[in-house]
Length: 458
Image (cartoon, rainbow, N blue to C red; front, side, top):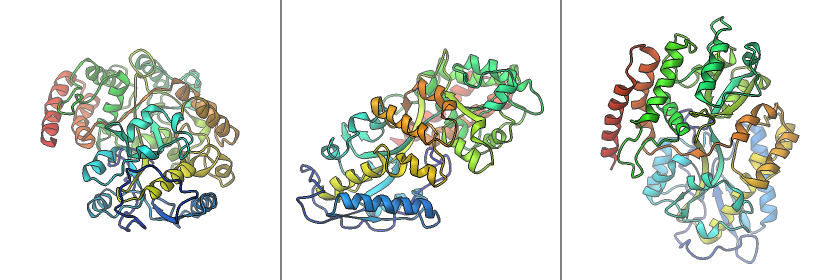
């Protein structure tokens, strides 16, 4: 499961192993060709599957062998502890300089790594020769791994958020599951019909605890086309008409329409249980929630679909985005960076092969194929990805077409996200538990508190 690092299941690899074969040589020279013409090079990479996941581990080993065959002067050292990143170990590795040559991070880790001075500038090495899909990766994805006009990482996977719907409940309520809601007015209309089914079924659900309420407030602000903080990151920017609309939408659904049930203060995992049990019509999430519903809660892929995150008058202007990537140790030699870029390209960014895009292999090994993520590409490469995925899908790909076709652009999380989310939990909880809550006062209070957080962060 991927989300902001502290928001969901904290995932990370133990990065205490020292990076192999790194050196203090400058990486600012022109990229060397690791496939020939140079000496032997060893490159270490973390986040390899552990022995507890034998199928994925063997697939990784096969891919590494395939890469080394194409690049006979490169030796890859895999570091295979799991999960991929643990915050305290990650921070310790940055302080000690013990990252792998190619090391896993979340998009939201970028500034921490840059502040620690541990990332190599890989801009000269990201060429069409080393990374054939360079020009096909979405600009919003590139923005997540760049800073100051320089590239510091290659994306591995990504997600944007949309509206997960229970297709079965939509059908029972007389709604077309192939036409999920596009706007908040649509959400209200559909939620009323679903809640009218009775039997404890809620039409719509949302979070308001565990920092998840503030996380979803942010996602819904993105859909309104508004920012959470000022461009310079020093002030809150949500105390406005868009922020008010977010809280008013939820208050109306909860108390005027009565479509959210009486129990509130939900955190991550609570809505998923309701959805899997057939007691919830829809909620905002990323596509991999559906995998959790099926693999962990016993639901069925065919019962779910996705639409875009709703906005004021149609699909949202933006969707909260996240993902992960591989950064490069500042101690890496030019040959190591070149080999690392080529390795990440082979493992994660090539259609029809590797860890993400070998759909035929995934299907044959019993893994799920068909979810609309990662969404890394645009143009012909995106179309080819859809074609290959559909050919080997293990679930109804068409059920996600409204989400994919809306193509809502991703918006990265604000700096100091977790502290901001914690404050906005209170506003979300109030409008969902108190019929007399004053959304404007809640925004005023939260804005003042976030201003203080941001001032202390300077």
